[in-house]
Length: 87
Image (tube, rainbow, N blue to C red):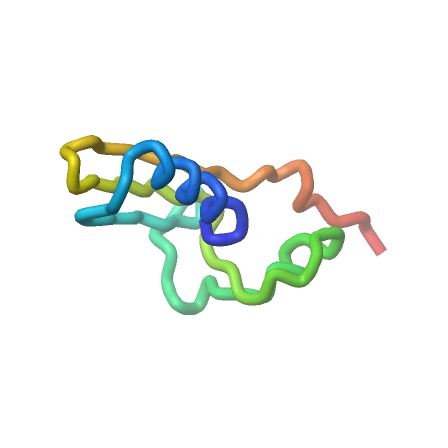
């Protein structure tokens, strides 16, 4: 979510203003995300640049803004990029 989502959040903030509240749900695509799911991104996709720790394959985020607007953001991992060649 923070790898690519941060850019979307910036855009939403430009149009909607200051956030009053935020909520997010992360999961692996099947199960709820737990601490044991946290990995370095290059363990998951060796072709990506080093982005540090990542968790989950899906994120569902909701934001409520001071002016009354509401925004939902849904992110899903691109599984095709995660396929590793057989060594």
